[in-house]
Image 1 (spheres, rainbow, N blue to C red):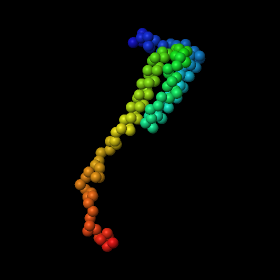
Image 2 (image 1 turned 60 degrees about the horizontal axis):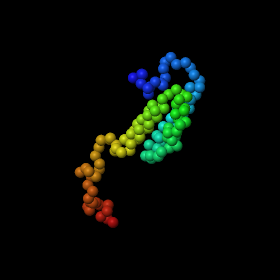
Image 3 (image 1 turned 90 degrees about the vertical axis):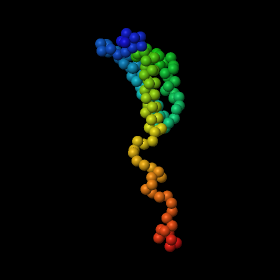
Image 4 (image 1 turned 180 degrees about the vertical axis):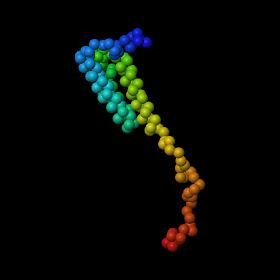
Length: 126
């Protein structure tokens, strides 16, 4: 698997320190963090919009930055969108399901009578 063409441009333990490559990796990290924060806010509000940060993943600039960062752009895009789907599933699960708290609803029980009590002493005086 290490010889795969998709994984060939990943971090290895014996890499020489390259400040230019690290700069472009930090640019990439910042862009991905901005996208994920935006998508998490959208998921909390249950809004599905195509954000301007997502457009960046379809531009030639993104491919160039990944090349400068010595990373495979297809893999970066794939992993980022997998993270977005995990965020959406996390908040969709919380929105669509009711509470897991056990118990009965009041209107379904026999303990509380919904019929009026005409023998109530306080109301019969009025």
